[in-house]
Amino acid sequence: MEERFSELINGILEGNQRVIAKTISMVENQENGSIEILKRIYPNTGRARVIGITGSPGTGKSTLVDQMIFRWRKEGKKIGVIAVDPTSPFSGGAILGDRIRMMRHAYDEDVFIRSMASRGYLGGVSRFTGDAIKILDASGKDIIIVETVGVGQDEIEIVKLSDLVVLLLNPTSGDDIQAFKAGIMEIADIYVINKADLPETERMEIQLNALLSLSSNKNIPIIKTVAINGEGVDELVKTIDQMTYQSDRLKTIEKRRKEFAKWLLFEHLKEILSSRVTKGITEEEMEKIIERIYSKESDPYSMAEELAKRVKINED
Amino acid sequence: MEERFSELINGILEGNQRVIAKTISMVENQENGSIEILKRIYPNTGRARVIGITGSPGTGKSTLVDQMIFRWRKEGKKIGVIAVDPTSPFSGGAILGDRIRMMRHAYDEDVFIRSMASRGYLGGVSRFTGDAIKILDASGKDIIIVETVGVGQDEIEIVKLSDLVVLLLNPTSGDDIQAFKAGIMEIADIYVINKADLPETERMEIQLNALLSLSSNKNIPIIKTVAINGEGVDELVKTIDQMTYQSDRLKTIEKRRKEFAKWLLFEHLKEILSSRVTKGITEEEMEKIIERIYSKESDPYSMAEELAKRVKINED
Image 1: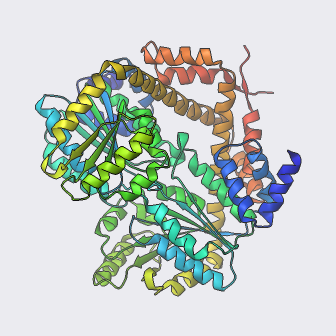
Image 2: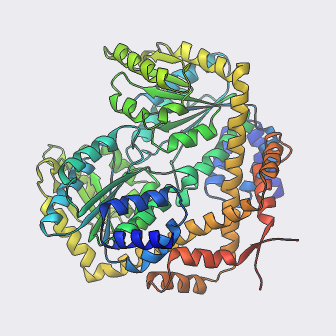
Image 3: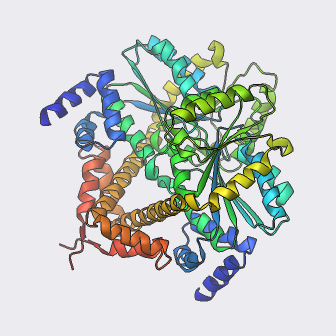
């Protein structure tokens, strides 16, 4: 076991694709030892820049990400991509998306691409995504791209995970603009209007600038791209590079990384605590509790408090 | 306070739309008293049938739900709809969808429609969705429709919440079929091929039957609908009515409701426990902890274990 750990840890630190994939799966399946591995590699994290990319389905995220990988690879940067796709695998979106990306980068040892479901049992997957970022970071990736489909609350999650968030729009994203009023606007550090060869582009840009003028953060860059032929991607990549190294953003990045740390801390804390309580409960007892709730003799809220009573702050 | 509770509780039990909406918001915002209200109304739950409807974006869920509401309303059934839409509000999908639904049912006191984000801070929203179902149930709704965009892991969530799950497909959903192989197939109790006026319908039906023949649950009904003009919706509604009352499915429904109870129990337990731990930590201390993690002096995993040590099973 001990030996197997060191083997995996070394594999991760050497950037071995197979080992990285294996360890992420171990984390997702909450296999014994996965936490131990996460602990051991943690000191090797913090070097990668984590770039969040979000946008509605069909805005061209995968195509753009593919183009960005291409640019960064030319500079010899090592890339990790996590596609947190809530439409995956059900809509087939990510299945297809991954294929496209894979075809081009499949044989590149320095590009790791993984798609993860947006949430899992008891909403744990986003924690797994956080752990996966740490694994890729420790594996020596220079840039980790976290791609999520723009999905209400999930944008807030991506901010917690990312140093910088890119919001992808299309010239025809009228509804998205509308959604901005719901405050989503605030989370992005860069706006990209993709498919900028469409006639509505100018109108979209005017709308965006108008909204920015009302926003708390007025100097968000707006970049126009045509991902399909790579137009504008150089500028996007350059802007990301500047913004992630720019001294005046380092405070923001530090703040976000601390939020990320705090969030990971609490996700793991919750898990440890509830599993500890349940260890103290026999199956028969649990069945009785559920029966009492089902029969309306009690309710989930009171029973949760009752179970929580078994646990008390340790005064010693 | 006490009085305000009774007022809200009575409002819920009387099916007062405004009070229902207000209480769901209280739960989402974790306002004081919301748990107390959930406890008090819990004995009045369990009468509603909870129907989960899932499918990829664009399969026509909102239109179909609207048609189903229309049918059930003709029988005087009271309806609650929760649209758990991960594309909401960002893609505008749900914004638009809600508007369409609202236009038709807005003035119907016996139809309550609410759209909720698919997940929130620390993945708590699905718990809120569970609580919202209980509120609608207690408010005397006969049928509660939980509409989710088909999103990998989320289907598993919807099964936990629903008595019966309807999976919506289109004749052209080749990718969905592919996704079935990932096991999503198992979660549905009814398959609906919507937009069944398309030529690909027959091929789709053949594919589905072929897959069903390989599945553990071979007798899943396949219903063809054209939601836009209501075709097939009567049959769908009739099938749902049969399957949710059918004696041979009552065991399944009981099992699912117990899973729902257990899941709600643990969601609330986790929350109570982690909030209890954090109450014992001063802001300064928390900052120190985060600083230690950020500086790599420690890691989120070890610190979570350390914090968890402050809590121990109460032996007395």
